[in-house]
Image (cartoon, rainbow, N blue to C red; front, side, top):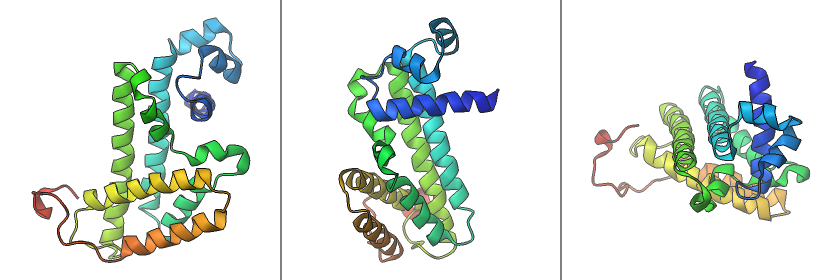
Length: 206
């Protein structure tokens, strides 16, 4: 039952990813899932409620992937593979090079309160996944320990989002791979001693 539910959410996630929240109708969902209207609305009461589940599903998968990477024996290579897999999707899945959460942020004004809360929670979940990855990298001395993991994670997530946009627009996959390599070098390089917070590193969660 759980597997079947995840498969349905995978299909709906792809639909929202490709078309966006506003342009996706419940009729689109009905066709994508090959369900009758009665069965569809019995499982998903409306587009907004469905979007909430999609946000939770997408962020949960991305965070789980980051947590798995944090346990890898070769953290740098695992991080490289994560960026490569996420950024260099096949041509027929080019829309997936963009971040679903950032796409949803662009349509935030179209979301009701529950959907907006779910979007914020999803963004926080993914950020927490990056924080776990950075903590692991710091533990193994790949990344400076003088800057809180939360600060480094926010920087890495920002770079991830920017590179996704570049990968979506670019036809030069080798160029994108080059930028991934540069990002990993920057991640392991020097960091400013002042991290832009009035709190000391000890006061911030790592």
